[in-house]
Amino acid sequence: MMVGLIKAKCPRCRRGDIFASPTYSFSGQKMHDRCSHCNLYYEREPGYWYVAMFVSYALNVAEMVTFAVGLHTLTGSNSPWLYVCVLLGVIFILSPFNYRYSRVILLYWLTPGLHYEPGRALDKPVQTQQDQNDN
Image (cartoon, rainbow, N blue to C red; front, side, top):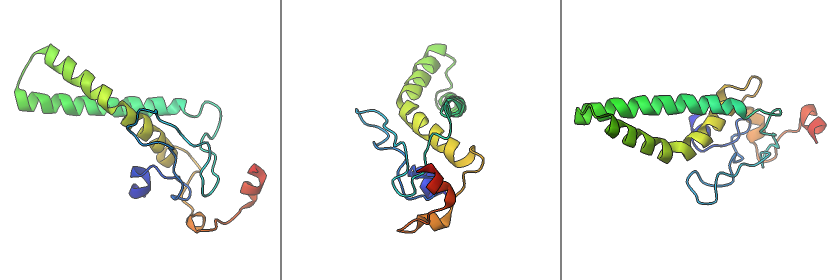
């Protein structure tokens, strides 16, 4: 499961890519609407990606606390300007990572009813009644 999550693969078949572009690119983060392998529609309902903002916020808080503790351990400084500058730089550098993986975490762990189905990982995915209704 972790390999599919790290590579941002479809949570249902773990074969199709969720994103059309790399994490850090000048063209921005482009997401596929559907899985190229099993045809899963990623946006489960209107407004589905708003929940990813909360996941991204949690990732930001965890990163800031980690870097602040690490910075204090390495430098021992009490200067607020050092912390503000370093943490803003870290947030800026990690924002594409947080955008991508907040959506991947939402799909993999926080979406009820969306689970890995080994039958869909085959070269010719198994068609279910639900897939036929989606098309």
